[in-house]
Length: 205
Image (cartoon, one colour):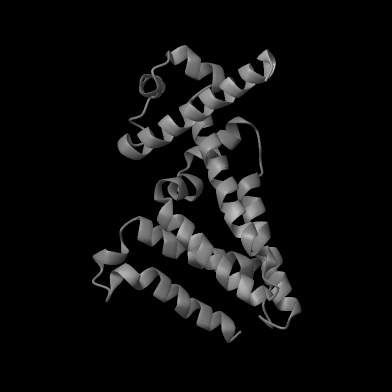
């Protein structure tokens, strides 16, 4: 490896170190309480070093949010080899919920916190590219289901949004620890049992 390649590798490694430290601090302290100095102290570098890579905390948040969508997209693409679009749609929902369960802090950053979207406004970007791409996977799949005779009488985009909203709502209630606070029977398994009921409704459409 030459000098230029080694320096580039070291820069990427330091950038990733900053991101992982920030992610840990955001989860432990909250976003408002976490400062650039906290992040710098966690990686034992100067504040100036962090600013070389990120102009502010919002930019760090947006980068983490982009990483989360990359991971989710990778997990969803594994299902592209499922030939039956309805079976693929059901599996996509389960993958989405499993991602939320295993990565609650990342899910919150991706779908619930306003800061990453505020970063888009700072960059004068009107389109949430990561969200659009993920929704696009769902909409394409729903359209393929329609072509196979499912969801007769429904409109593609509103239906796709309704499916996303339903599964997102389940994930959000679970992450927000609301499910086990309303005396539901077997609350620990409610998330996927509820999703199975939703799947039954889709099967009848």
